[in-house]
Amino acid sequence: MAERETWTTRLGFILAAVGSAVGLGNIWRFPFATSANGGAAFVIVTLLAVLIIGIPALLAEFVIGRRSNTDAIGAFRKLGRPGWRFVGAIGVFASFWTLSYYSVVGGWVMRYVLGTATGNALATPETYFGSISVGVPSVASHAVFMAVTIVIVAFGIERGIELATKFMVPAIVVLLVGLAVFAATLPGAGDGYAFLLNPDFGYIIANAGSVLPAAFGQALFSLSVGFSVMITYASYLGEDDSLPIDGLSIAVTNFAIAFIAGLVVIPLLVVQGLQPGAGGISATFVAIPTALAELGGLLGQVVGVVFFFVVLIAALSSAISLLEAVVAYLVDSFGFSRVPTAVGLGVVIFVVGIPSAWNTAWLAWFDGIGVALLLPVTVLFVVLFVGWVLGRDAIDEFTKGSGAGWLASVWLWGLRTVVLLLVVIIVALNLQDLFLTPSGSYIIPGPLR
Ligand code: PHE
Image (cartoon, rainbow, N blue to C red; front, side, top):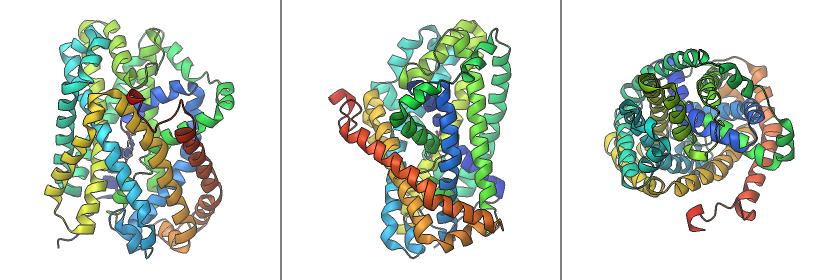
């Protein structure tokens, strides 16, 4: 069998991981999660969740991946604990599950690049969203988005994912900064920024039982943790990188890009008197074009095309990581060859996504199960495994290339105690909400209730 690929450079790995992290989570999911959970204060709670749970859990996935150098399920056997393979299995399933609806939203974004170019999306935003987000048009754009994802993954790590993200991530940064500078020139942009600086902690405290799990889910989803993706990406690493430095760079860049996206989106909306995030999963697709239309004619169209193009490459660079996590399992564990595996799996995932493409209520249901159930359960077992089962091996792997032995101990003890405790609480709250609260119940999807 051919030798397993590795990233050609350390920067290549970091860009690919940032590409995975930065995506619809930052630009599409974050605004509506924020508005559903009390506004600006939610941003702060999410940031805390990144620091206290997200980064330690990200490093735990890196340790599993780099130490095993194989797919996220085989990794547990390679580490001498085959009984724990179910953890990888839930994670790989979570990637499979998530990509099915993520690609639907990615397809809408593709439509919006065209729709803003022609001006149709700006003329009647609500009607436009309604016409492209359901039924046949939505299934069609879902198919195109999946096809592009498949092509990149089929090219493999070096010539596919690494090469693509080397262009995509810098492009996202440059274009977003340009848009943020433009947004700063809008009259009254200051009011928009003030929105971010006006947190209502009272709401968060009164609704901690639902706000905390939501912030946790958003933080980990945004970092691509809890899906076997970061295990898989780290499995293509050599021994010489410092995992803590890489992990921190990725988390900081991800947050910085989300923040800049906020600086673009919030002034646009607030200046036009729109509530950021209002409107649930359609928020980005209705409110932004409404605001762009207010800018008027050509200017609105140009800004719109650039904005949705940024969202599109951000979505694609995340989608490829989700597909790669599943492809790597079939390639590494069964010796299948990459190209037919990527194509075959891509088609299956496309089919699973058809209900979400057909009806947005299914999409919201898939998102709910993924982020409130599969993600937290995977994180719980990853934390347990690395903290209490791998133990010394984890310290050894963490220290390799970083030499920071003391930091490794702080991290491991953090995982064993605080992180584990918090994750247990989050899982319990989520399970209670999913199965015991009739209104929040996800057992039956909204449209069929
Ligand atoms: N982090 C990505 C985003 O914010 C989504 C994602 C989740 C990608 C999990 C891979 C794994 O859009």
